[in-house]
Length: 313
Image (cartoon, rainbow, N blue to C red):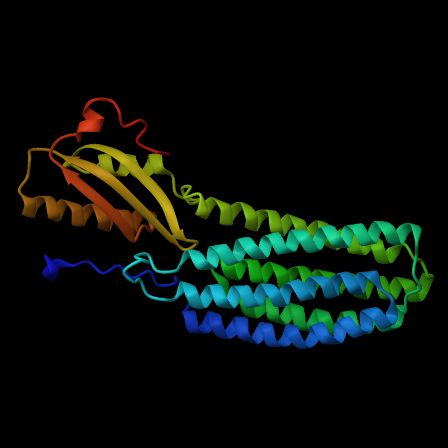
């Protein structure tokens, strides 16, 4: 049957992989340079807010490396032992990045709490200047990544790292200015904790979405019950069972289902029905990768009541 071989292309939706790779490289280079500058000045000025922002920036650099590797792996074509390709690599990179965000955030909160009882002298003016530089680099990098991210979890993780650092840089500027005007030592750790709370919220969102893909849950926005109803609504379909909806990668939803057809059609007619059903699934639900097993009667495990629920198996 090689003449009728189906070749499923798992291309990245929306944005060309090369554009995403360029965006990641640009952000990586800019943040690596900024990391060196901020680390030196954070130590010199004694600012925890700036050090917290630098720690996030260090996590950003690692995150961008992970995102770049994940992006490169995700675009590799399917092979004999990786029949879906490497699309899950970008999901695993997103998971690693979200855990990295959590770890860095916990460390910053610990340090901030210690600063309340052991305040450090901070050079407010110098901190504000470096914070302004960080804001330019991080906001610019976040915008570049956002333009090419789409629904891609890997680039979303990279974006949130950069957006968190842009927030951190804004907080650094605010802390520096307040210190110049009031000499209030508490502002530095307070802003650090506020920044960290925002980062943890973003990390939780990424952890939830990446774990959902790895556990092969139905993607958000796709209702398996609605999909089953749509299949049952087709005239040639008598019954539907073994419906599974999952994500190959964060942008590649997939479906498999058993379809019982009426009137025992010929193999040719059954194939035409299958083609129509796949076209309907692609148009109504965005399911470009659907595997349908066409049957003229229920398979044995369904007929004997051993199949369990049709959805959520």
